Amino acid sequence: MIKMLHKVGMRSTLMYTAGVASIGLAVAAWAASKQLEEAGLERADHWGIFIGEWAPTFFAMGVALRMEEMRDRAKAGVHGHRGESDSWVSAHAPASATM
Image (cartoon, rainbow, N blue to C red):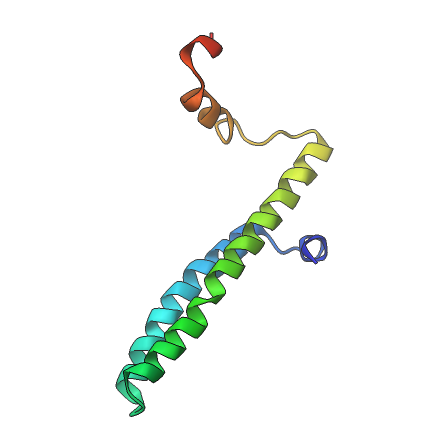
């Protein structure tokens, strides 16, 4: 499924954005339900939790799509932008290993 999404143009940044948006939407749905419905706090909690459960799915799909994007770059011979992984390695490697 991830390969199919990647082939049709879905990118990891879109999934990450959807994850963050779903967190905001969960808070908005909770607040709206609490204010607009007379069903009480429990009903508002159910709406907030229901929508809040979407975020981990979007983030996981973003990670999977990011791996597909990296795989495509590796096949094309592109190893990413300078600083993307090189900065992490230089920041976390022992001083003797970077010389």
